[in-house]
Image (cartoon, rainbow, N blue to C red; front, top):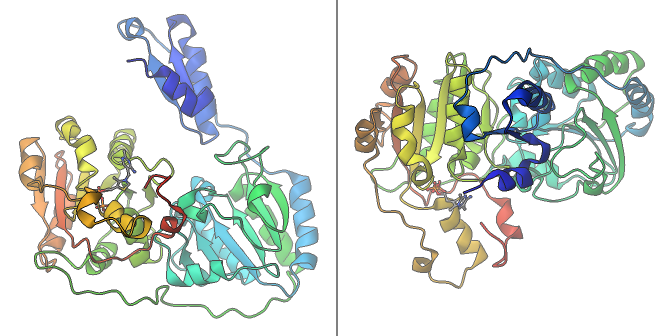
Length: 451
Ligand SMILES: Cc1ncc(C[n+]2csc(CCOP(=O)(O)OP(=O)(O)O)c2C)c(N)n1
């Protein structure tokens, strides 16, 4: 099977084919420059290349960093006048999470502008949990306060986007109905852009401030502070970001998934990283925890949304930096897409939680909305159960099953933070009917689209 045309179709220049050993350095340099633009790369080697010995020297060449001075100048001049007396909302997207020190910078900006702040699930990594102006995650698995705020935005409001996640899971394909949007970005060819911009996703005025987000904010914040930012209406700051009542009454043998995530949130230790696969974890974790944790950035796979991708990200992260405590949260359905690869990752010290609810849960709950008249057995969503601890051991991993009352979760987390060299599967029994994070995407879906 030739997968190169498929990779070229998906990644364009990011598909680097090495078919001539003499041009390998050049090709790897090209791959590096694409990665420096935060874009994905797949390298395909012809088989006869793989069998040759070669010395390559491709030194790391960081891309030039900075911001466009005239954009910053214009913003600091115009902002106080345009935003005078108006509410300013900050939206933090995943681009912001690329740069160091962003949690401190976003807090400074929120404080300076007295701006309620929301974030996409990957943008959360650029937000501090101590940001008083934090209203929460929006859209898929979004917090109630953040959703109320975001849905209430209208022509009188201004929005500052730090990065722009245009996808279905972050903006639900909607345009931002604010009267004024300033889009801060250092990227020019982002997914979903038109001519390097997101003007088509904004109802009112749209201005771009170009530059690396950390460099731009380090310039903008002191300049605005000196000039003054004008008057703004007072904002009531929420302490708790959720208001829905969710049943804690779960099927016998299952954990209360809210309590599970609350306890996990207290258990993280420094130098951790987490990945959520395409399962309820990628909407329920952020709903329950509300704010990011400083010791564990989390990345979810909602952009491609291909089940099993979270496992690959976890393997990649661990191989790139073995010192990172690496946690993957996947579903019992997703397992079916990577289970055969387990033996190859047995000695990676990976930690894999299987959120085991016995169904393709997102599909099962989604179809109730999309095709309400079809009887449930035709969803084909129930999954024959697997002994995940047994399967883990059979593949050279260790395995644990979380007790319904969570009484062994502390012991499991202690084991997760021991670096023994052996990977661990943790089976988490969950009741599929305990619906926690919401899925606003469902309202867009019809029988002509795919879940
Ligand atoms: C490769 C792939 N196939 C199908 C889908 C559609 N899909 C989205 S979520 C989902 C169910 C996932 O099931 P599971 O891993 O058990 O997680 P749960 O939703 O139950 O938490 C499916 C089939 C997808 N996103 N990717």
